[in-house]
Image (cartoon, rainbow, N blue to C red; front, side, top):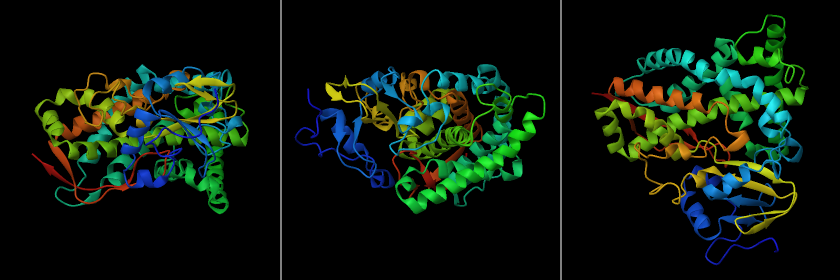
Length: 406
């Protein structure tokens, strides 16, 4: 069967859902709704990033993720975003190297470590909430979402506390795929990422000279799989850990405020029954979907959803669409903290590349909600949110709010 180059009647020809305006204006929903219904495996022949396939349904994305030997994540084929990036990190690798490097950092995110960190997360979250002004407008993204996630990253790395906002900056740079097809902007991006690697290289050298400890830098420095990475590979893995550790949690924390403002009865339900906070966290992550897509490259001709995908084709798995798939999540647009199957969301991926820090992200969001409920603290949006104008990181640049208590 020939590769489809035109969508069915009524669906935009090869809809380019990498268009940053869809996300900056929060207008992506109807486009993906139509694609899921009428062209769920859709070929886009032209975009700033070249031609690509869109996989929009939950089941089809699971099919792609379940076959890593057909659909490669490797940076050698372009990596994990629609932009062809040379970032060599373990999520942008195939087995067995992916497995070996993932195994190095996995202990930092195991159940025992999460339980150990939970108390400190709760203490820091409570202390931060208690510093926030009541009845005075401030930016939730900067004061809460960024600060809490940056603190957590600094602790995971045992990173110099006074420099922790560098992690936020590098996360924003690393996730900025739009700059990659503008030579001048890409050169600036690469310069910042080189600065990041040089900074971490000093930390690697310090940790390698000391006995192994529990922080991520020490784990990498003392491992056979990651202790002798070249510069590009060090850069790639740092981007992965910083963006993964920052953007998922940060944008879900901001998305939670938006969701509870659109569905205030859900916040009222939490205030009435604080035990529902644990169930609320996965629904927040589903509803927000902090990373809109992940990319694979097809290695051998195959079929997905009745469409032939050829070797070398770029395949985008739109998590932001799959998490609105009515076949899995009835009334999917609604934000419902009692949704029984919210954990079936694909925000963390599926299969061998599922996010290693998924549980840590979830527990941070859960604790934030619990601590707000304990203080009977409600965030009210007071102005237009500023959304990220890009198709990879799905999140907020600014979110003006005021707080009330009681």
